[in-house]
Amino acid sequence: MPITLPPELEQFIQSQVARGKYASVDEVFLAGIKLLEQRERLYQGRFEELRREIMVGVEEAERGELLDAEAVITGLQEKLQQRRVQSDR
Image (cartoon, rainbow, N blue to C red):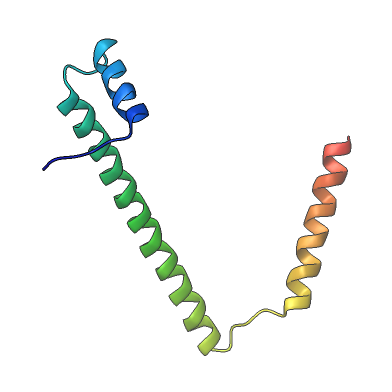
C-alpha cells in the first residue's frame, strides 16, 4: 500500500526514528494507527452512551416525566449564583 506524505510529516516520522523513539518507520505508523483505533473505540463508546441517555430521556418524556424549562433555568441560575458567592469568599 503506497502512501504519499507531505514533507513535514516525513520529517517528523524520520525524526522519531532518529531520536530512538521508534525502531523503524513501520513502528511509527503502527503506533499512529493504534492511537486512531483507540480514539475510534472511545468515540463509539461515548456515542453509544449518549444514545442510551437519550433513550432514557425519551422514555421519561413518554411517561410524562418532564421538567418545566423555567424551573430548570431558575435552578441552574441559583446554582451558578451560589458558586459565584462561594468563589468570592
